[in-house]
Image (tube, rainbow, N blue to C red; front, side, top):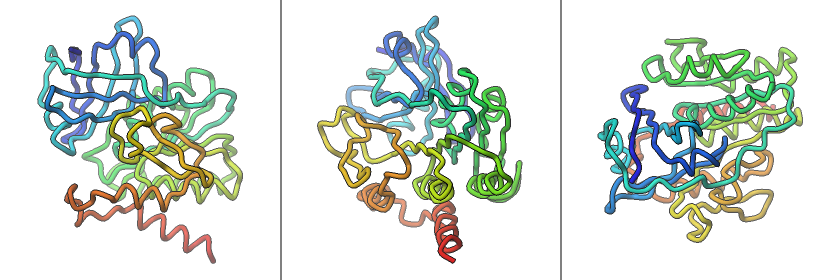
Length: 286
């Protein structure tokens, strides 16, 4: 059993927890993930490691309440325990050797981007962070990102906080202004990551994206997290979850992520970043 020692509600649907898991805390690095199970009847759910404290033996996770398992986890309080907490899984982010990086997070993807910003900042890389949310009410981790960056750009779709627009708009503005990045990390909705790559690829800027295909066991055995990278099949759980954005077949990834769209009851959902990606594609085609 794994004890919850801290719980922080970041907004109405996003929660941060610190879990006592010394073995994971000792080895976990930015870019890796864990799989938790609340109880013996629970679903296995992957979550990115949002931070570790080796001295304390704890691992931070940040999750959005979107299904039965995360709803159940969100009801747990400090002092409660969960059954399984397996990790670290996946490959750590390859962040060494970069001088100036831009870390981009969209929505709850900002939680996944956060440890990369911290790792880059701690190694002395100059770090710009661009994070985007639908509106002011769901902004998370602002103070944390301020501590882990040289420049923080807050974007909201409706302009209710920070600057008005998508994260891709800010990135495009910075690149057009001559800001010279040797690394961009984009984590969030697939259309957003694809749109970032459409901006960085013509300039040859190394771009890493963290993929989110359907995942079951986290060991590569089930094959559910298969992705197409440079025309070859890879498994996000063992070969990733981070990949070179230039090599990702985003169309295939989006098709696979929609395999259970009926069961997930997302028929009426419309992603603003999907529209932004289409607009950017049209603009670049002119």
